[in-house]
Image 1 (cartoon, rainbow, N blue to C red):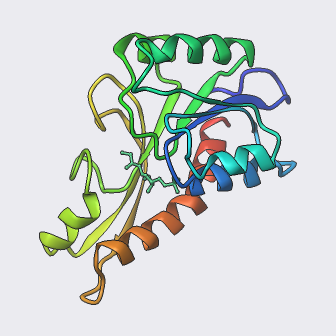
Image 2 (image 1 turned 90 degrees about the vertical axis):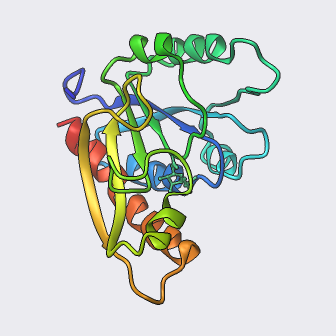
Length: 192
Ligand code: GAR
């Protein structure tokens, strides 16, 4: 991913559905002088998503798209992305599947963070699966989004040891902490 205009920061959007801890860490990093991105838009698929508080607190434009009611929720999102001149989208706990048309419009410019060592455990309940299968390691993956679920080019992976004392919840928290630490840094490096 190339930085698009000289020294100016790249406009990004972050898509969320829940807690928003990755959004929070992306916001924090974006404020550093050295960061190569600025967050212009937050999109949430859920009205009550906790992560929206971070957008509000930091005066970032946000949009809630009610996927249940709207027939074509992406239409408005695409308009807003254009308005905000967004070049890169970071999915951060966004639990909806983007349409092939949408992915085409941002081909190679959508990143996702997924809580497993892909290609292992695509989809949901990754931590339960890792614990139930008595895996020695789990972790997270940052990848480019393509039209197949959790299958695009992997750009970064972090392995995390699973201890006997871990359960799914403990593992989830441990992995999320590491996600928060690495997501902004990996994005920033990609923009280099
Ligand atoms: C993160 O652990 C992320 O990897 C996962 O949702 C969590 C969101 O946390 N994403 C997926 O499962 C996508 N398939 P956050 O809302 O605190 O950033």
